[in-house]
Structure formats: C-alpha cells, structure tokens
Image (cartoon, rainbow, N blue to C red; front, side):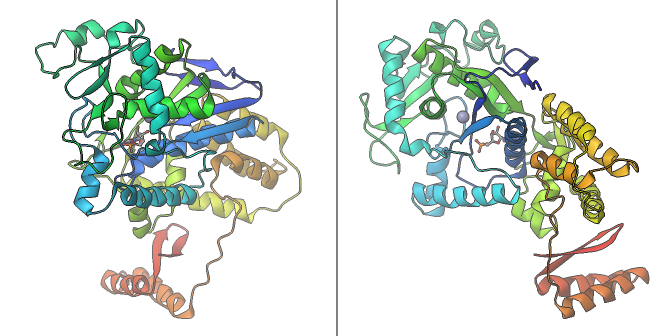
Length: 454
Ligand code: AMP
Ligand code: ZN
C-alpha cells in the first residue's frame, strides 16, 4: 500500500519513493544536551517515532539516526551569543562532557518511557569533528567559503537555490542591510567554523586548518547524516523552527559539497504551544516528563495526548487537556483489556487503519477507527487487531500494569474515596498527602481513582 508524506520542500503530500528498495533512511535532528528536554521537544520525537513505526508496519527496513548536539549550538541563530553547552558547563561547574552525558541519559530515559524506539546510531557532534572539518575543506576547495575575524563562513550568494526549503525571500532579507551582521557579507551567511577567541578559555576546542576553534551547529548535522546515511537519503525530520535556518543551511552545505540533491523528504513537526504561544521560559509550560509524572501523569498519557492531533498542527498544552486525554486513554485501555481474544484479526479494520496512517501519519483518524472497532458489536478479532494497531500507537493497550498496592495505602485510598463522597475535601487532601508520602499517587477519573507508584 502506498504511503503519502507531506514534504516541506514541495509543500505537498507525496507518495514515498525510497532511494533503496524496501529501505528507508531517516535522520532526526537531536537534542542539544545542555538542559532537560521539555515536553515540546519530546513531541518532536514522538512524531518521528510514529513515522518510523508506520514504515515498519509497512514492512520497510528502517535505518534511523538521531544526533546529539554537544557543541556549537549558540544561543542565537545569527552566529552570535554563547555556546549553550559552554554556558551550562560553567554554570554547573562541570565539564562539557559531564553535562552532555547527564542530560543525554535523562533524554534516553524519557524516550524509553514514551515507548520511542531507539535509533540505530546516536552520533555526537564532538566525536565527529574530523568529518566536519572534511566537509568544510570540501566547501572551501569549491569556493563556497570565506574567512572573517571570527570564523569561516558559508557564502550563501554562491548557492542559487539557497532558501528553497523555507521559500525565503532573499532580496527582502538583504533589504535590511543596515542591520549589523558583523563581518558577514550577507545576513544569511553562516558560520562553518568559529575561532576560539581567546584560545584556551573554552572547555571544548579543536585544531583545524583555519585555527583553533569549534564547528558551527549546522555543519554537524550535514556531516553526521551523510556519514551514516549517505550523500542522498530519504527523510529528514525536525521541529518546524528548523525550517528557515538550520535545515536551510544543512541543504546549502550538503548540496554544494556533493553537487547532488541531499534529502528527498523534509518533514517537520509543529510546535507544542502553551496558551497559544510557543512554550518558553517567560510564558511557562516548559514541563519536563518527570514533572508531569510528579503530577500523576504517565509518559503514555502524554503520548496519547500527542496522537490526538496531527503532527502538522500546533497542539496547545494545558494540564486540563492532558487530564481529559488521560481519562480517554484510561478508558481505552480498560475496554481493550476487558475483551475476549478469539485469535483472529479483523482484516477490514486493519486495512482502514493502514490507509489512515499511510495518509501522512493520520493518527487522529487511526484512533477514531480504534474507538469504532471497540464500539462495533458485530466486529470479530478485536484483540489481535488492537495488538496490530498498537505496533504504531505504542500505547501498551493490552499490557496490564500490575502494581501491588500495600494494604496501608489501599485503606487510605478507600477512606479518601469516602471523604470525597462526603464532600470532606480537607480530609481527602490530607489523605492524599499521606498516600503521596508513602510513595504512591492517586488521580481521580470518572471510573474511580487510579493509583500509581510515584
Ligand atoms: P533543541 O534541543 O533545541 O535542539 O530541540 C530539539 C528538538 O525539539 C528540535 O527538533 C526542535 O525543533 C524541537 N522543539 C523545540 N521546541 C519545541 C516545541 N515547543 N514543540 C515541538 N518541538 C519543539
Ligand atoms: Zn540538525
């Protein structure tokens, strides 16, 4: 069955045609590991996981790379500002490697909880300096670079297709020439290599043909993706914020170095927003997965929440919305687990399901089909069909979580239910605190309280 994917490059849904028959290569821009990833970042990786699971469902062999950015990502996209890793290392009094290792391990843990399949390769930028220097050398020998006071820059005027992904209006951008952009010839030019200034202060710096320094953020992804997936590969993913700068620059570097088209399908996940705006420190909403867990949600409650909206639409987050998603998800799981297994699959539902997911990852429709199946009194083969669908949803729909609740906690829960019935909320809160202090959390749903280990 054909698979259609929305390609940012063409602004169209296109039928997937892979470079190598039956194989798909995917590169997902990974995290900059200077801090915890927030649930917005995690939405991006749930999106690429659903994509990957759909390709596996369609019997493709998938090779997936997620990089780790542990150097070179500056606080501003204009090649100015501090290196995020250096800043965090100084603030926490640690080495850059200690910082990277810690936040990388937290990130991996989050992915595991979210049932995200690990990539085949996790390349780190700091371990691929040679490849990045090689690529800059290639660009230099072909005349695409120039040197300034602070580094080696890519000359975007030399690449006639510059900005095609984002449909940038280059003339319009250049009109702002009075705005200072340092020694750069053009506003869109970007750093390939930055010089350490002065040498010996940064925690991470390397020698290069141009002087001691560190790579630019964009060159990392070009070098690592081409190393592990080849000069031309199938799908590149990332958040929608990467379209106009990061991915635009990756295309420029890679296509100028190889003289070939770089990636066939560019796919972008829309943002998780908070009160209608991009989540940010000032607006709030920057929860981590552990913070949601402390509030009594599971990682899969959040995964379910993400599946209820198309990856291409912005999704507005609130605790209230997550609560309703959790209720629906708990109900779904309860129904799935109460069914009798007759050992068959329901071919019709599976076919409709595959049609939905193959239409640009339509998880909204796919979930509707699952609910229809559950409500369909005549349908046979429910359990096996759910099992099949869950290969893509990855919501553990048929996995019973056995948690042993100690008698003491059980009796507190019963007392609390009684207090709630009597509308004695003071007592009910006190009992909740007692339950929490014993390491359990309780959340109230229309089906009654749900108890989890916290
Ligand atoms: P970073 O660690 O900043 O490089 O971001 C990691 C990934 O998360 C990138 O693919 C970003 O595009 C993505 N991202 C950042 N903020 C959000 C958000 N609010 N919603 C969805 N994705 C995001
Ligand atoms: Zn990237």
